[in-house]
Image (cartoon, rainbow, N blue to C red; front, side):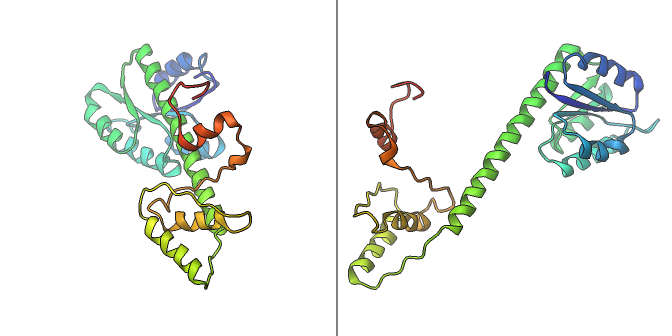
Length: 234
């Protein structure tokens, strides 16, 4: 939590002061505001690891619609942001609705500091996990795009080559392990890509491994797998 930046939005200055006093020593930065209209500009100017958002802002209005509205605005900006709703005890049903709408959790007023800190820390960890998943998905998509651009069209007229393509078409839809042999420069990697393109895993990433670069001790485990714990990092 010490490297985290937290945004707190609540029209009650006493609530803001209490939360700021609690979180300031534990976080990198705590930003507070009583005006939810500042949320868009704050999101544009800084990255927040968690947001604490009040359910109601107008005096005498307890519908929770304001909090739900700003929750939707925040998630429209970034669906991976962790938003924790702040609500009074009588608004639990509204808070549950907010969770269904995308909030990660809710905090009841008055809160227990220890429980609040656990809730915030969990929200931060969740957001970090979401960021990592998004990064990996983006990386996977980039790899797929590179592979698509790198696709080579196979052209062959001989009966032998047509027979090879028939075999590829036949085995591509199976889970059979396939060994392609041939002299250097005969297009084994091209044939492997064509096999992958026609397979049930065509939407997944195909990863090429230069087996010649592997040591003798790792060759077998990389090619055929290994028992967990059989060696260091296994």
